[in-house]
Image (tube, rainbow, N blue to C red; front, top):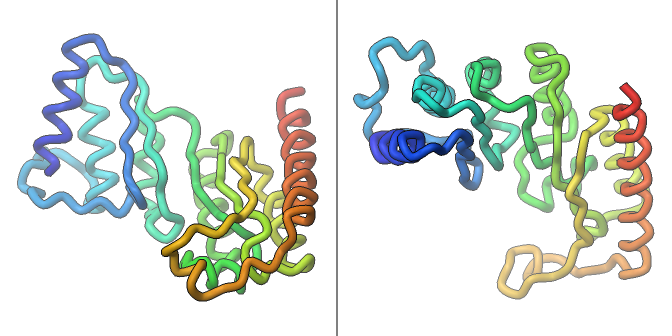
Length: 209
């Protein structure tokens, strides 16, 4: 409930806490079960954007962050709320892959272009925003061409950081049941290293500024 979240943060602030991170799977799809608890003066209709606004009103909270949002729920109101004073200049927005077929296999429900459109809207509103992501290399069925699309997407976005993982099967998951883990460990390591080199080059270039 919204009431519980706000009361917890208020209590933290009273006791000297200055930074809050809102955590959740697809955290930006939050729907308050008690919307009547939003302030009368809250300018947002999107519940997550409205929550960000409410936290910004709590005295003593000077740093606000959230993770991990889903690209499909990055509304214009949420992006606007990220410009409020307490919000840190960073977003962690997992992409996982740059190839549409692999994204479909991962059940991500968006295309690479839809992800890039979200990035464009973020950068248009917050030009110097730092952006992090998650990427999995070597997912079942990922061809060399599919991986290169991930590299291309990385170059387009110029992420500030990527938490890159090599795919490994987890028993009981849909991918474990439906797909064959058909990319060799050696190739997974090669792809990981390639992305790591891209990341280090881009971050080095950014750090010169």
